[in-house]
Length: 514
Image 1 (cartoon, rainbow, N blue to C red):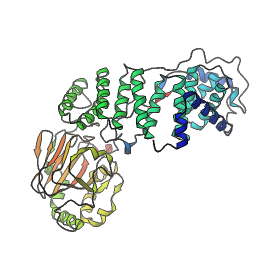
Image 2 (image 1 turned 45 degrees about the vertical axis):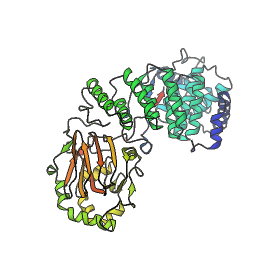
Image 3 (image 1 turned 135 degrees about the vertical axis):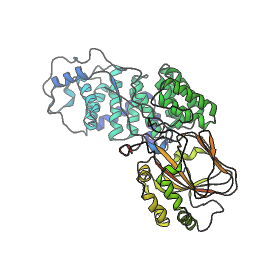
Image 4 (image 1 turned 90 degrees about the vertical axis):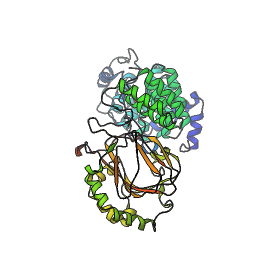
């Protein structure tokens, strides 16, 4: 909410009718500044577009906001709105009498229905500026009672204008338009969903959650509405409320993989391990192919038909052989980086979760720090200079470089303080494997992947699939330090080494009307 200017906050706080009056006044000023561009379109063309394009909906999806969402998420979904056609005015396309002369220099001479249909067509073609001009004129004419618009038609004008403002002039005006659309049509689900996501982007979590709850009340049989409420409660830090909404969504639609994925993350955050395993079993029963196949392997993103086992044999990977052979060099560079043999945590290293918020909630107790060689932004200059031999070794393996470059997994030094525990969790994809080379291994630390516990050994590698449920406990005193290297699963062909999206919980489906 802090990102919204004070004047805009006051505008948002106005009573509904005052908000619309304020918005119409502002739109009138904006309309007077627009350019003229419709010389080549005549009224009969617009009438034909109105007859062909009126009604129905389609989904419109925004890129994921990776920085603001946890890294345990399902895919964006391309599901239609529960309401197949929320606004479908009858008998509107031909209203306006005989075709008028060509639209030479004025937008206002086209019949309202034809002008609205043309604007919606331009929105679909992402010609935001041109659509905005037509919609501004429609809103002004409706406010002046030039057109005998119904509430549904006014809602459609404001909705599409909100979509345009999101693209060309910022969120605050889009919020005003979506609110005006809902004032004219309170149950317009498309406007609800777009406005919910805007509120989330503007860090207005209470408003987003409130609107999500309202959507569940308006559409109690729509699983997508409860899914949306789960996502927004998840983002607002309310995992218990999110769980309740996901449970209702799954009761309505037990075959929805993204809901299972997000529900699982909430259950793990609440420590409800048994419920997590039972939910996975239900998922496997309802979705027998293409998603989870083992209750212990529950990543949001699944590559089918590749080897799925919690632990892998390190001798199968040239990377592990090279790391073990270079162990003395890597350890020496680590000690030079630290200034001495470590007996306490390296305070100059960053706490896990500060760079990438996705890992912050994994730490149950203690302290966990890291120093990256490769991160999603590329090489980290400090380690490239201070640990050149280690960097050179990693550079020789494209499966390591490309894993980091595509944003799917880093390579770094990882330090764990005695007494630290990392809660059970699953990684974001089965497309990667993780290698740990033990560098400083005191008594006490251990790791569980799947159902098997193991520990580290100095100078030796362990390799595991972190899409399986795993946890770490350090019951010793001194820090444990490993070189952690993520790399592409050998079952994923190089042609498929691509970014895996999204990196956060699936956001509410974004809707457009046409």
